[in-house]
Length: 331
Ligand SMILES: C[S@@+](CC[C@H](N)C(=O)[O-])C[C@H]1O[C@@H](n2cnc3c(N)ncnc32)[C@H](O)[C@@H]1O
Image (cartoon, rainbow, N blue to C red; front, side, top):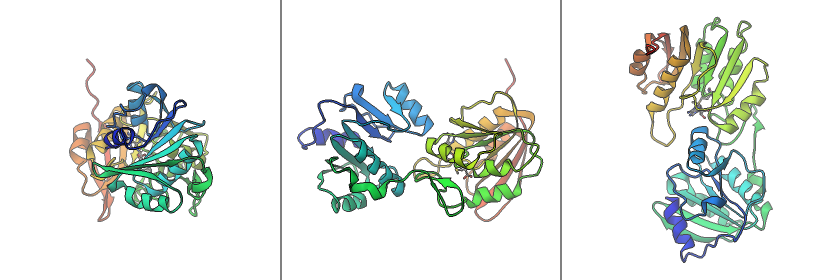
């Protein structure tokens, strides 16, 4: 846990906070307390909407991107290696003092430590609670230049970025869903968890569609979607799909819902998407979704829709179609 390692680093471990300037903390885990840092100088960098809102609710300053220089920067390693490297390069460039890197063993901290050590002198590491924290001086900004990446055009012809879902290729489950969608989906459609926009772009090939709402919690994913989906009928929402509400009820919701925020499968996320879809749809609206075959969505679907059909799939994925959303009776 970062709190224990930071406390050890500051208390006799040799790490000293700068006297002034903000302390940027990139992607801290949501259960981090950061109580050893002065909260009034902390600036959290978090683009995932539910986590972003949670930091704001706790009274922290929180931004989606860092656009200024800071006194020190702390990178909490995300799981995706390319994203971790990109954050390190960005933090190195923006920090005027130290760059601190913290991560769990399961997030690859050991291999990054080996790589970084070959490039620059490091202090620490502090090893504790199945993770490591180490730091270096940020005075040689160019040392990680080759790790810097932002949105880029892939060989497939779409924009993605490190850490965005299915950044290298079209996701096979979404591909299966796109191929199964009927020609007539109605006019007002939402794509829940729209990612870089693959399904929305597909839906917008239909002339009768008047709007596709891309609802995506990942700020960077939505930035990529804005580049990929340039049709004026696309409406972009940086939002948590489980709480987002459309201005008018929808004809269809399309989704390939997320099923983990950690390594373990968390079907409750997708179940939250199903409930939100039922709420957002008009009485004649329809839900089309694709899911890994082992994930238990049917019960939630049947609680929120009168009709639920499995309409295809393959050995790995199932395609589900639900109609007649059950709206809770108004009091
Ligand atoms: C399985 S991916 C599908 C992405 C995209 N539809 C595609 O087909 O490539 C699920 C997406 O849901 C997003 N997501 C996760 N939690 C979310 C939430 N609470 N609200 C909105 N989007 C969320 C993820 O960032 C990810 O882009």
